[in-house]
Length: 502
Image (cartoon, rainbow, N blue to C red):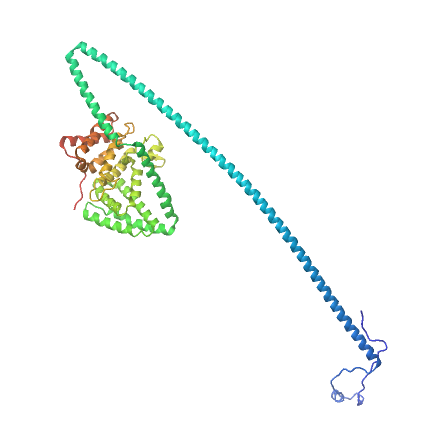
């Protein structure tokens, strides 16, 4: 649409009321400006017929523009309403789709859960059947073993009866022959046989008395219990401390302070008490941190055993101050028994009566042998190490300055001797007699004072009968131990390590 003035629109021109002089060539700009009048321009409607027509056109244009704007606004309103309706429709569809998806997901989860439950049920049923099968197999195995055991016992009984029968028949034939030869010789022979029988019965009686104190199955369980304790200490204490840098730094500082204390022990009882008090104070300082406290107790237990391995075998008298320090720690800190006893049994299992054949790698490991560069230590070095440990332990068993503890008492010494005496002769080694030598020097005097005649019988058994039972194997330590027994039986004196000074 175009807008313009009508063709017959009249134009009026205002004339100036005063004539302007003609411009001459000599007229200056200032002279020309003087004749120009400036006044405010006020719009005025021409007083002509066309003015009304113009006004109508103007009004028509304005009305049309107003209607056009209103129409556009209405279109915009309708467009927005339509858009809103579409958005609402889209939202409803989205809600429907979401609800459908939720239902579908729930159904899928339900199906999966049902499937999982079925799988779990099937697996439980399989496990139950497997356990039932194993139980039945175990029962069958035990039944077969029991039948085999009964069969072997029956065979052994029949064999014994047959042997006994043969022996009696042989005895009867021998006696008949001797009677035929000479009556006097028969009487002498019968007297000799009676004496031998009495001796055999006496030996059997001694064997039964000591065997009544020995349950090697229980001893083996006890041994494995201490082996487990060592593994638990490593896992629950040592490894946890190693993973904590700050705590490891602190306990290492404690170790550096503690190590010199063991070297300060001497034959002086006063010095021993002083060092013991200092060690107790140092340990007390760690009790507020449980892990550090346990680590310290384990470290001290290892340090004591290491000291016994290296120093006591050279100077047996050093076992007494070390034993007193150790017993002080045991009575002050009851938890120390757990760490110390496990360490004793690991390094020298014979102190609880445990013996294993060393013909295998496993056997040597269980008996505490050391291995370096894929080579086992020399048997002499092993005997020296465990003898040092046994000396320390034996001294602890005869200390009466403290309330005796089960593993470090006269009773423990009795068990030690009886169990070695009852050990299978095929398992006895030079080590056992080396340990008996160490025990004899460390505790025999006090042991004899404690148990009197009964103690003397047990000591005679190990120093005479036990040695005779392995005489054909010629153990060097057995020979040495026999001299201890001979000296005692001849002079009544016992070899003993020197006591401490006041």
